[in-house]
Length: 253
Ligand code: APR
Image (cartoon, rainbow, N blue to C red; front, side):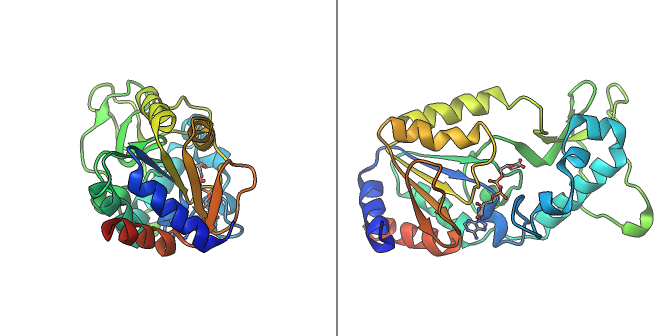
């Protein structure tokens, strides 16, 4: 479908939508300098082995390696700024009757751009809990990694002395039930879904566009490349190109 036609159709659907879902992946934070996961050569999983860094077994095997890697990622996010795509998402929420923001990202760039209550399907880098008793860790988390300081040991739980782990969902772990339920209900109910910057590699987020499309929603992906496997059409290009244009069209409607 021609990009201009798809863009204009999407604006028309947004103008009349009673409920819009925006679902984001790592691609929306890429232009803030946060590495995506599967980009060739620069993606995190092309440089690191997810099995050595993003599983409970990896943490048990080498807690300081895993804690240090997540502290490095937390430092990346702390040094980054929300980009115009994050800000456009926050602006669109102000001029739509009902918008649900769902993200696979564990950064806080949506919140720092002004979005309220994004549904984090994969957790948050900014918070942590005890690996043993799951009590929240309330002290400030480090955002500095000094390579000369040797391995960065995770802090200990004030309640049981267990090791503190990041509050992110690791491979093989259950998704947060409440967040998943909210996301599924929103995908089922929405009139328009914008799926932004995700490779659609990970369940259950990958099913959200299908749930929306099967219930009659207008589904549009915004990505650097078309995704022939997911329902809907793709506005090809950076999130920072298309989202501000969509927000502007809505604001001037
Ligand atoms: N604008 C729009 N899309 C972009 C941009 C950009 N500027 N830059 C990259 N993309 C697209 C890529 O083309 C790719 O399709 O974003 C997508 C990023 O895909 P992934 O790196 O696989 O990230 P994501 O889909 O969020 O991964 C899902 O996998 O490993 C797990 O927990 C991790 O939450 C993550 C999940």
